[in-house]
Amino acid sequence: MLQLHAVYYHFDLAFFRLSIAIPLSGMYGYDLETLQDPCVVAAEKSASIGVNLLMPGANFVNAFPILGRIPAWVPGAQSVRIAAEVKGYTEEMKRIPTDHAKKRMVRAIVVSRTTLYNF
Image 1 (cartoon, rainbow, N blue to C red):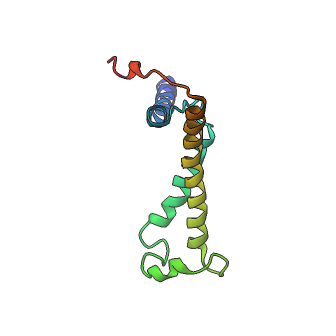
Image 2: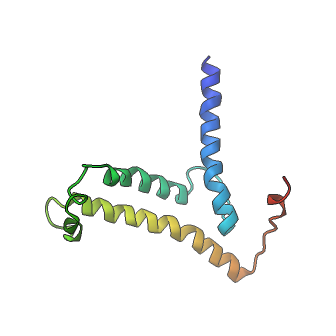
């Protein structure tokens, strides 16, 4: 029974990696080596931190949208600071594959994607 759990755990990680690798490879030509890739780490941190902002009743910004305009240095503006942190991770997540694609365009490296059409 313990072996079945280990197989499921590895399948779960492989499915997670595959769900990230296919869009990155198809859109940007960015190939993932491991799940510790900086793009994956930034996406994971952004999602895990940002989910707290989306929970109903988790902060007052949902009830009073004007509170989202307060500067981050004001005491009690924790949701504004969290949103700024999530924005930073999201920008990093978008920057990494686009920089990779730009470098490949400058070097004129063409990747054959015929394997996508061979089902």
